[in-house]
Amino acid sequence: IQKGTSVSQKVCEWKEPEELKQLLDLELRSQGESQKQILERCRAVIRYSVKTGHPRFFNQLFSGLDPHALAGRIITESLNTSQYTYEIAPVFVLMEEEVLRKLRALVGWSSGDGIFCPVSLLHPEGSCVSGTWHRQCPSGQG
View 1 (tube, rainbow, N blue to C red):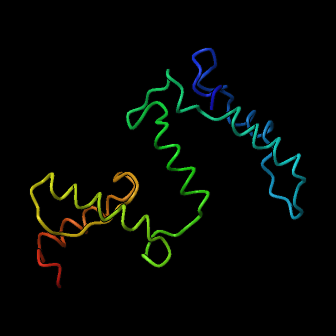
View 2 (cartoon, rainbow, N blue to C red):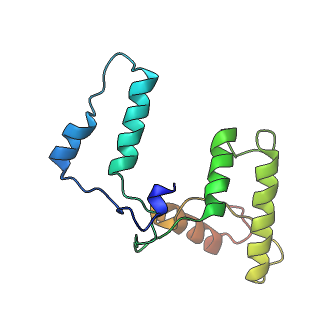
């Protein structure tokens, strides 16, 4: 993280695809590898990846590292929980309900429902279906 966010480091150590394939050795083998080899592969992935948290990285969708978001990702990945029911993720379900309550209040709604999904660009069909469903069946019943 420190190197990836330092202006003294490159945003990316760019390699052309064929050269990068040779450097990474991406062959899928039938046998596992030692922890030492896995750690070396992790270092290579980090070395040759674009450092999107770098202060000089800019993209049309995002730039920079948000330390609060990183902390949240570390927590959710460490807990390794599925976040779809209260029984399996009580804290996250309650957090989601509160965020949705606040979002509804921001647009002037006193009640409603919602879902979270990563970047709407990844789910254009879902966005269209949800919007159409709400317009056609505002009560939520088909």
